Amino acid sequence: MTEKRHSGIVTQFVKRFVGRIGLMFFPLPIGLFRRQLAGVTNDVGELQFFSHPNFVCTMHLIWVGWLVTLGEFYNQYAAEHNYSQIPSGFLSWPWLFVLTVTIIVMGLQFARVAVGFLIAAIVIIGLALILSETLSDVAVFHTMHETLKRIPVTVAWGVPMVVSLILGLVFVSVASWRRMNDCWSLQARGNYLEHENFQEKDRTISKGAKTFVAVFPCILRRYLLFGFGDIEVRSSTGTTLVDRIEGVFYARHHADIIKNRFAVTDTHDAEAEEEEAEEAAAEEEVL
Image (cartoon, rainbow, N blue to C red; front, top):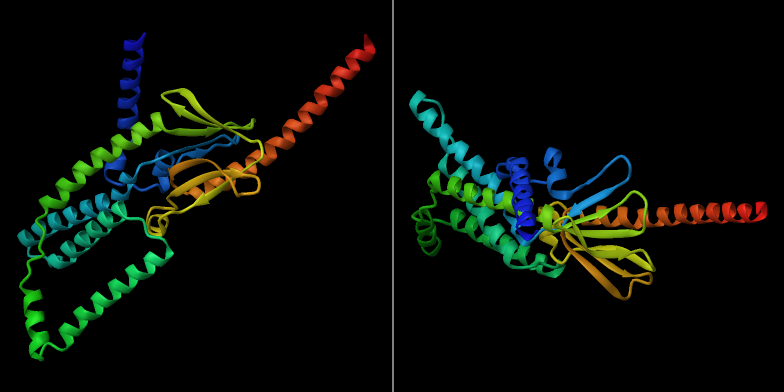
């Protein structure tokens, strides 16, 4: 029985991996790929979404790496046919910038105050570079300017390609695995938000006296990663934390849907109970 279950899990994983192979090149939860990463709400009202790890912070590094690779391929083609080429700095610097931001966002969480300090630091560094360029005639700034010019920042096209290839394959694997192992669903009728772990319900959040609130521990992740945040399940007063769903794309959107759906479902269930009570009373009168 256990071997059959393991075999079924492997088969499902392979199918989902193949179905999500496009994420290796465009790992963004928009357009056709939104369903694969952020979940879906279908016509009958069923909601399904997934919880993701911090590894999704690499999404921009992946697709930017492929663009840089295409740019280098174009330069090779242009060199053979005497066409104008893309300056190497236009390819290297954006990739290095995205790489730096990705590492920072994966390792740190920036609240509002921290984001302010980060922006201030970037502005100061930018002004320092502009100042060294403008005042390059001054001895101190001339030395700084010449030192910066001697720093080689050219990135060979194979580096971003290999990085995007490896991260892309891992990204597809993670997305496929989370679809099987960390899927949340809300049926069209009912007061239960259920967590699915390999087709088994191992965690259930019932309506009760609860509310659903989207929280964003990191402001950068919220705006760079399509509303990436957590959904907190709190008491009706909002003061007590009951549960937390971490790593959700479009967290506020999903939290609002769950909150509204539970309110609507309560009304439907109340009407159904009244109808059942009336039918039972009518049957008793007949008897």
